[in-house]
Image (cartoon, rainbow, N blue to C red; front, side, top):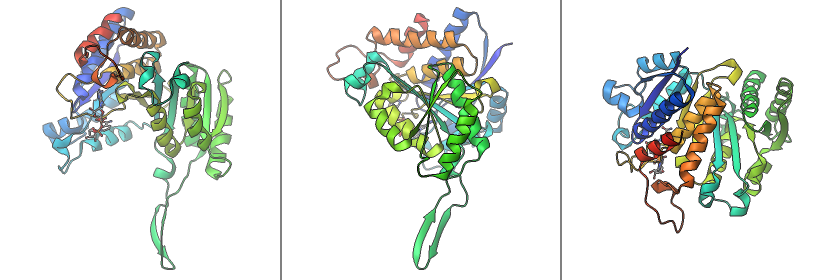
Length: 361
Ligand code: NAD
């Protein structure tokens, strides 16, 4: 059966980078004799302009029927003062598709090692971390939460809470993702202090019994924050809750050096559960460079590779895309955001970058 993909280009550089992602899908189709049906829908500012709604009901409907969604980015100064916010479209589609798992790889490509925030000797052996963050629970959503005054003192409180169902389903996503990579999961918690972390650790261990081919280790979050800096090469998949994941995924991203290289996936289940996935670059709509063919399309292209691997189980096709990206980088092609100190070549535009990667496939 044809695999159905919905494109949500969005705003700013979103349409530019999604167009390159589509080029890559077409190249993969040809090379591996596959067939994708592709449909476009509106989200964000573009949807506000067309219909007054950042997430029109028609968009939700087509996304729910799709096997996977590729999103560009939303937002921009044009809509900053409006009643309707483009970002509401993004939050809305995540909720509508029940996307509770956020997966962010942080990869230091050896070709771009000089962009890393870390010393060369810490990243030269290669860094390839996948942070799996629970997205719909934890202290951000726990109730009760609020503010009150007791005995003349102002208090504010949030509730760090997880139930075993929520922990089990995110652990399954992490183990399942690890199976398609280095087969190692490091679960990050604070179980020396927090009750919620002790339940987290126990449920992760129970879930691990279904994935005996994957190695499991545990780390306290404070140590993990240090280890990502001291020895990032040691990690394969990190799984953690919403709060710790929010911080650690940004820290791991800083290790790689460029926002234009970071893909992501948001999933509603482990690969074996067949949940629909939403794939998007981590960066925003970059209004400062929109419409100038200056955007780096590699985050969007690498998001397509994640889609091929995680939703469609096409590991070989995903690897081919990733290798094509590296081959183009090895040839010295760089978008403006990838220029390191002392680099003196010409700058490759967004559309040409897409053409070059597609040609390598
Ligand atoms: P941003 O990620 O859009 O841009 C930050 C900086 O990085 C800018 O200088 C930009 O030019 C550069 N940059 C980002 N992506 C790039 C790429 N692919 N190639 C080259 N350079 C790139 O973040 P921002 O400036 O804080 O936000 C701009 C708009 O994007 C805002 O409206 C914000 O709300 C929105 N936003 C959307 C998302 C999303 O859709 N997921 C995420 C973050 C921000």
